Image (cartoon, rainbow, N blue to C red; front, side, top):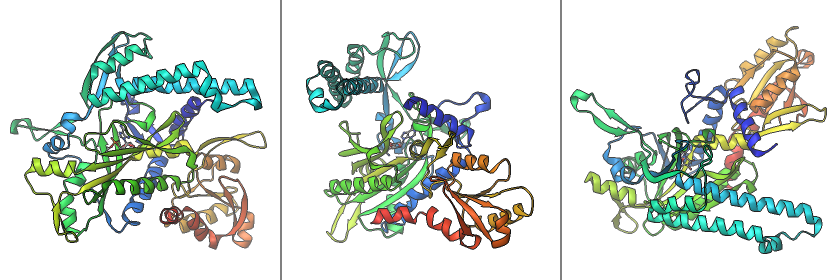
Length: 514
Ligand code: GAP
């Protein structure tokens, strides 16, 4: 199965098992907007909890807030979003489709890399054990050609983006002979800038309504509350403020399911530090955040950093944590050294002094900021992609299993009476009642036990608890483990502690502080 086919299957699986639905589906959907179903919302809430508690509980100098989505429109002038939150767009005149110019070029670059990988694969087959990959990459003429094209496109694009040179972006597209994926032609328009913020009106028109924006990031809600939190919480630098909330961007190239949406959620933390110490903290936060990702146990080799060459208008260093999705390595989280840009500009635009008096140095200054910013939905997609497996069983059957880390699994245990009679459902419901105050548990008595196990595998439930006739005699049940499918007998009285030890967040947190 190709990675593309695998991804299609995952999307279908998400719908079939109540993880994610297209929004407004009975009205044919709304592009790049999605709803979370009964399993999806549990998974998403668990991911948020993992992030929130690792920030606000494991660090005694980080506190949380929940600021409003609607904010004073001047905030977006101060932040630079009104002037510079743009995507360079290009239209194909034949298909009438609109694309991000930089994404077209990035796709071209990725294609060259795929071609190089294919050449290596072919040569490996041809030469067998005698194959020397390093030498091949160095000497093969076709590889050299693909490499040259890749590097040319990359270097010119970075330079054009840095200089905001839209004509050059178009020229790269023409020079690389990039065609529209729909029409197959090179009939391109000029490249234009397009602002990504959604506008709406506040107040009635007769009162003279004001144009306001749906926030494109949660970060600004933290910056404008810097003094409120610092003063009321008596916070001393270095300290951080964390927030989880919705953000909105009118993405033109919305694609890959919930990877790029128009309405999405972010988990952002702004860490305020002394000027001059920001790059040291940037390095620390890079390590801390990578640890958080890797603790989930999906394999360290699937993560990497991608340091930015083109820095955003507010940053003096930036990197992405990338995960290897079925469609390649892509950004899950951004870590940015935002300097004093935001607080400094809010001071300027609001006319209010935003300074911190450092009792250790005796100085007042505008603090510098390290930001960690991760998309909740993108993290959900990462966990779904990493967990999905179509497994071939020894008996010739296949099962689809979601290998969620137990702390993130939507349902922690399913309680299943072997048959719907002989008093077994009553005992099963009694167990359910005992567990439901601590865990999200499900009861299921429909269909054969095998089918019920498959349904739980498909939503990633770590434990299936089967009540059978022996239970009536000795108050033990069969516990089946999702990943190994092993079964063992456990006393009903031990279920709670056994499940608790596996599904709690403690195992993850221990790795973060260790
Ligand atoms: N405050 C900084 C900021 O917003 P960003 O790199 O634009 O930085 C941070 O976004 C994270 O938000 C990304 O790494 C990604 O996980 C998520 N994100 C951004 N745009 C998104 C979109 N359209 N759909 C889903 N997630 C998105």
